[in-house]
Length: 441
Image (cartoon, rainbow, N blue to C red; front, side, top):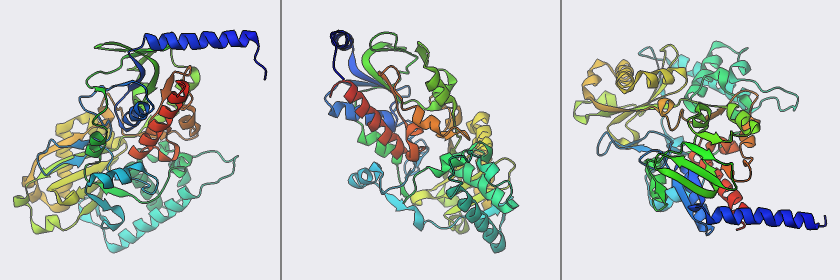
């Protein structure tokens, strides 16, 4: 297509406006959120030769990749992500190797012991449960691929199956996605990447250490993004920061809650995409144990699967990496209730579960605990994103920039890498590449 004089004049005006925005800016790019996506994006922007400032509401970096150390020396645990999923293509595998952190191949972990209402399941019950998981796996890994086939929830997919399969589906969605099966899209589950998983001792600490040199303003939550002018102006309690472009990496739960405002409001298509996703409630409760008060039988089983409490399916991880700890994992509405009840009530409930497996004597070994309450965390509003049934395209729709100067990024936009630290990292780099193209790099 030939350029007309009018188009040349219009193009010159756009370039002039862009140059004016940069001249008045505090940085070329502002990144909102210092989780894995925001940190990866900021790092890429710097490598591209542009100035960048990262705003982080918390007093630390890493976001939902966080190694909890409050239980004391030798008792740290990952309150957020702990696995390098699909390690064959995950950048964190090589980063972990280079850093020399301790890792474990999850495939070598012992098979969980199933406990129902304090009673260890028989071998027949365990076989029945494994068969149920096998049936669910076949249903979810091979859904109807016909374009005309409507997306279904996991609950709908197993509605005609026996009780073992339905129970397996509930355990699967609660303990892998942090959500109830009637709210999980089969299509979303099916598109997730698979591969080897590597368990990392201190994944959150690894992320924070890898990006320690970036310019991050801690304790500085963004409260409003004004994109009415040629660039963006981000308001915070410490003042307004101006930039040519913004990379927005806050969780979709925060966007849905409306705690970050926009002027003008986000386009209808972007808002609709946000509404197409929800946040799961995967939750961990770490309990510090006194080794001197543990009996030999309390140390025997590395992992326990505990179920039976109405509305709650929980996975009890004993002595991760040999540490004197018990970490209770749970998800779905039961986990939401624990988060909303507060740390004291959640620790009591976790101790009750521990005692139901090992006997009341183990209570004396519990010396402290921490609740990773992502569901009630105002800067997360959940653990990670879940596509509502029928709304899988929302992930891709969020990748469309707003006015070519607000670029969204994070695990929610990572397609097959969604819900993971690796996916967030790759998507942060994707958004940064788009911004660099926008800036002419």
